[in-house]
Structure formats: C-alpha cells, structure tokens
Image (tube, rainbow, N blue to C red):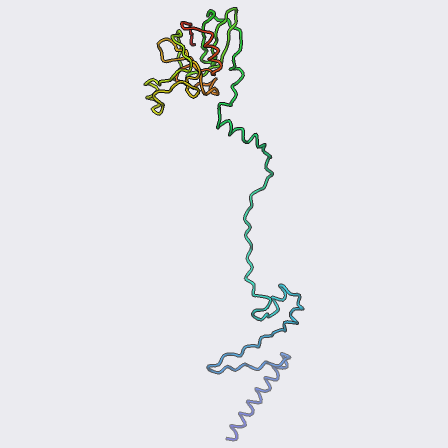
Length: 266
C-alpha cells in the first residue's frame, strides 16, 4: 500500500512539473475555469453604467447614444435602424408666361357670341372690274370663289361675299328671280326635314330666322338668295344649296334687282 501511494505522489509531481513548464512557455497564468452545475445558468457580467451627469459630458447626440445608457424616460430614446430615404422626383418648375386677361377671354367671347366675328375684308361689298359676257343687271354667282357679282356695265360689277352649298349640295345653271320677300318666313322642305328632323316645321320671319332680312326666290326651285343670321359663315361651304349673304348685303342687292332678273350660277 505504501508503494502504491508513492507511485501516486510521483505522478502528481510530474503533472506539476508539466504545468510549470506550460506557465513558463506561455508567460501568463491560466484563467480559472468556470464551473457550471446542473440547473444553474452561467454568471453574466455586470453591466457597466455611467452616471447621467458624467454621460452628458460626452457631447450628447449620436456619441452619447452609442456609449451611454440612458434610463427609461430619459432624454435619449433608442433610435430605429437607419434607412436610406427615398426622394420622390419633383416636377420641374418653369416660369409661366404672363397672359393678358383680355386676350384669354377673347376666344371665349367669340365662341359664345360668334356674330361678333369679323368677315374677311375680301368678302365685303366692293366695286370691281368685270369683263364677262353678261349684261348689266345680271347676277353672276361664282360658287368656287364664293362671290356674287351684280353686273353694272362699262366693265364694272358690284361684288359681294357669299356662303354656298356644302359638298354634294352645290349646283349650277341659269335661273330668274321669281319672287322677293322681306323678312321671309321659313318652312323647311321635306327633303331637309328628312335630313334634319330636329328642325322646326315653320318659323316666322325675324332676326333669328335663318333666311335673314331678305330673300329672292330662284325660279320654281327651292333655292334662294337670302340673308343670314350667321354672318361668320360667309366665305364657306355651309348651306343646302341656297346662296346666303350678310343681311346688310342682301338688303342692298334686294333694292337693286327686280323680279325677272337673270341669275347665272357657275
């Protein structure tokens, strides 16, 4: 038994020698191992806290947030994780031109009251040269150019601007004035009512009547030379075959020609 104890002591001494050699090689003492028993958690290091008065010397802001430990309800709160902000593209802002209120209102006024529109000066009544074969007192209707000539003789003619038939409603020929009426009533023919059932069946003469102030009927046809309550349509293809004039022009022509006058439509 003594011999066994001696062997054990010698073994322990050899271990101690090996440990001393390990200490000599490493140069530093080994840390004591942490022992954890069953049903026991590992000990946690105590948090290092800094007094609030001292922490305020860190400069505040982001540095104090990183290194400080502000109590709940303190001045600094936990900040959310930083996210790259998304910037919405903004529209360009260019200086807007200044608009004259009178100019901006003018198109609306013209649209709401077209009667104020000026007729092209070339369609106004004027004395022009005439070198055709028709004699004085003859009415010549130039459909393509939208002019009506009253031949005066001596190479002259009175020229008026007119509105003529829409495509498909133009015509040509020779007629005579079969009747004249001031402020004529209007009864749309059946052919027109078939195309425009919304039209009135009869309308007494007056400023709102589409035949205008005067009408000169062409033979036995449904066509007329008449005035218009839409003077801005002069110089256009607008009618259903009639020849329309401004009211002041048709009044002037009405007083210069009589029943039986020759009308040449080209």
